[in-house]
Image (tube, rainbow, N blue to C red; front, side, top):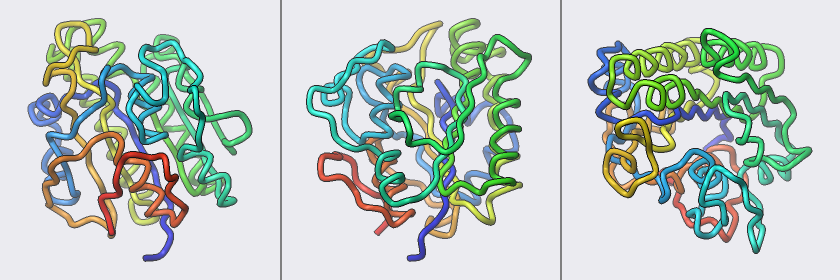
Length: 259
């Protein structure tokens, strides 16, 4: 397999039943064109910073040591995905709508990055997608991480999970995903995942509403229309490392979903 460039998009707080019921054209597009899971697992606690650290370091929160949205240094540090990309002399970019996600990358690893506060503009999801697309057009980084937060903040926390306002934020996030696929799907493998779900106006409980998440995989390494089972957030870093032909760290606990 030739090395791939990869875009990872996380849609913060998107539940699989929200995706399936939001009546967006991307629902059918995913079913026809991606390998996908509607029953993948978050980590416990299903909270944004612990979940994203688990994505990039492929271990549960009890191992990376951050159990809330306040970062705690790990007792025994090891390299995560951004470190491995840097060691391989490849370039990384990160565009995030939530400032604490700075902790998923150590200083000096990112070639390009930008943060936009969700409440500072009408749609930080749209703005960050704009900026990510500009970065891809000008610099073509080997790996780009795009974090879309408004589904969680302006949708779930402000109005309640599965409210119409929340579903509208899901639709906005899917609009951005379509833009990424339209602009880059022929040059990049695109992977999409939620970090956690939610219920009422909160998340963090060990219940299906918070723990079960969707994942989508677009690109020639993945079979179109295939439904996947038994995935977790820990599988994302090994899968991306395999696609990019960079070493998988011995301490990672997840598994690549491709051979």
